[in-house]
Image 1 (cartoon, rainbow, N blue to C red):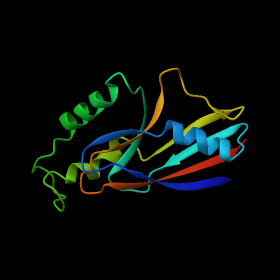
Image 2 (image 1 turned 90 degrees about the horizontal axis):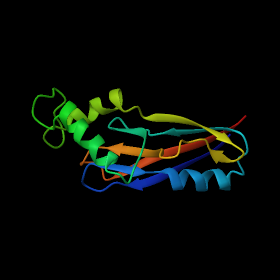
Image 3 (image 1 turned 180 degrees about the vertical axis):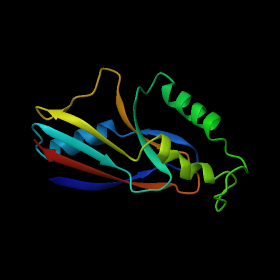
Length: 136
């Protein structure tokens, strides 16, 4: 298995950060052929989504998460910024992992699909993401 941990600077705002290009570069560096790319976010307040980006779907996702998980005082988990408890619920809806088939060294994503880090935690501006290639 070839594995690497990368850092992503998400800043102080909610973000959907496209990791696809970085994943492609990782597979090239790993001399990938057929197998799986496993992407893992070792954080209690972030997740991964396979979605379309660039057509406002990423903004729609953040809006939907604000509707489902409002950043207000209802949460029992109360450290950090107001409403931070919702960030700890996020990985229950947007999981911290994704596995994508790799065929002939290329991600087997659909035409408009991208691999994205979803981070609503404004208290943590730097995230780690582990990329692992498992040959088939």
